Amino acid sequence: MNTFISCSIFKPGIACFAVASVFSSSAVWSAERNRCSSAELRSGKRPNILFCVADDAGHFSAYGHRWVSTPNFDSVAHRGILFDNVFTCNSKSAPSRACMITGRNSWQLEEAANHWCNFPLKFVSFPEVLKKNGYVTGYTGKGWGPGIAKTADGKERKLTGKAYNKRRFTPPTNSISPIDYSANFGEFLAERDPSKPFCFWYGAREPHRGYEYASSARYGKQPADIDSVPAYWPDNETVRTDMLDYAVEIEHFDNHLGKILAQLDSIGELDNTIVIVTSDHGMPFPRVKGQDYYFSNHIPMAVMWGNGLKNPGRRNNDFISVIDFAPTLLEVAGVDGEQNGMQPIEGKSFMDIITDQHDDSIDRSVVMMGKERHDVGRPDDQGYPMRSILKGNYLYIHNYEPSRWPAGNPETGYMNIDGSPTKTEIIKSRHNPDTKFYWDLSMGKRGEGELYDISKDALCMTNLYGLPEYQEVVDDLEKEMTDRLKKQGDPRMFGKGDIFDKYPNMCKSRMYWNRTHAGEKVPAKWINDTDFDPLDF
Image (cartoon, rainbow, N blue to C red; front, side):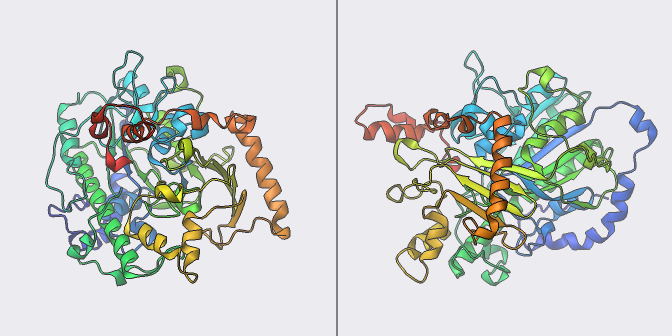
């Protein structure tokens, strides 16, 4: 029996709640599916890889978020492992995805530390290595990006494989992508050589901004469904509706996930496929996406693999970074990345967690995070450099240029925050003494240091930095963070951090704006160039 819910008519929050009727019986089905015979293990058949990444999603119902319904993600977690402490080291699409595919922190990736960059030729992706070693590779939706990646002879690099984006459909809202992800995956399956293993990247564009405002009401969602609004936003109907519209787009991602998994099941390849479902960073709301706080960098993840994962139905609370994806999937495939042209991988494989043979020699007590230039909005396109370390209960953040506006300058519209009804509500709050703290938290300037006790304050509302009783904690974390960054070759640790601001910004709409306002004559077609996708800006 196929227990994945594939809603033929997209009705999030209605039809998809049908998962409850099958979920209770899926544990038995799951246990049977996860038994693999010694003959299967001896066959030497290499596993397939399905990597599923939502764009800007921080919420799935497996984590208890009742206002979003993701039965297919939940089913993957039920038949595999639900991870509680997975983080990106850079909370913007291009740098986060660069870390995923290379196994290196963003400050180890030169230009690829930035949003809208040239992807350096020297850094090889794990899909490129897998293709070199006999895997068929492809993707639908969004792979790495936004930015430009070229080969030495100027051709487009296939960092996540061949694109499958031709199949289109009429989307359920006017903001959801018309790319039919599951149909494109079906085309990939039909075209591939079935004698070879495959690595497919399902990169939905949802729930990236923008949203059709109040589209959630068409699917039965009401503002009262939200159990709590984060304390750094106003709690009103506008913000709650914005959150529910975001939920609709996550459910669209989950709907296609179910259809993709059902296709694998129908051709008998589901058990031989490791499935990772995750996101590139937190939700596209103020003080989340593009920042360096707990919920900006914390991402959901579930993993299942019928022939390789042991003891399904577990939860894991080890600290995992997106730089751990590449070494894990290379180990699954039995391929050495560095012997195939990859730069030294910083991440650590979590295959021992998948096989339930925990390797205590691997340090999973710390996660490193940070950022350089994201979206523009400061003089000379300067970034807002940050580095942080999450260890135990504490998140320590160092802001290297506190004189700069962290979300972009006010006169340019705080451009490192996606436009949204919630953003508008916060901007409005600036002029009211009773509500100005919302603006301060999301857009106001910050000090050099920040310290938060995540066990009590996951929203990072109370900065403990500067309090005498926490000085020892700050000193210890600052030293450990600096030591680690020096070992990783972070240019900012050696007085060379300004290099990140000097790398070119490859967003053609921004280059058009910069140069025309400087009095230069540039091609008008840049503003409509196919390399520019407003969904990615």
